Figure (cartoon, rainbow, N blue to C red):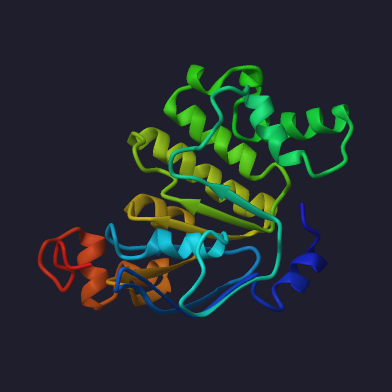
Length: 248
């Protein structure tokens, strides 16, 4: 675990900093000057309806897209990604999927085994080290993707819709892992989601997006009592409000 002195050092500047990020596709503005910061040891939720630009932000943070304008500053190359669809290689075992993330480090076989064992234990999958992804349930695949994302103890973790498609019980399990990893790794984390339980349980701060803009930001407890019309509509899942279906 990161030492207290190291945590203090990391909090002197954000690990993730986005300044005036703009992006258009085929003439349609998807991001309209997005700005935010995330420090070590905190989790930011980016929420909003489908098509509002949430995943586009993640793609910029991972380097999959280049901005039309603005700046993305990532102060670490130690990044873990938890994909919406797990993105495991079906031809490899669970152990082999995790080992891919360790390739660039010059580790002995024993060191690799120790790290993989520790990460699978953390997500409750120690008994599945030799299983193939097709032999796992959807929840087990998601937990394997968690273990793979943290195999190098990243300083930044990005979650793309981590509970989408899961039943309520498994969603709670995955949310618990997000909380545990925040405490275990003290990483700067971003959770992109539209699931109320996910962002309300796992995150410290929340940014609500609509039509390419951040229309509300604040702490989780503030989100549930704010008079902001966008946040009230989204949190209460009502049709009445400024977020009209199909207008993102």
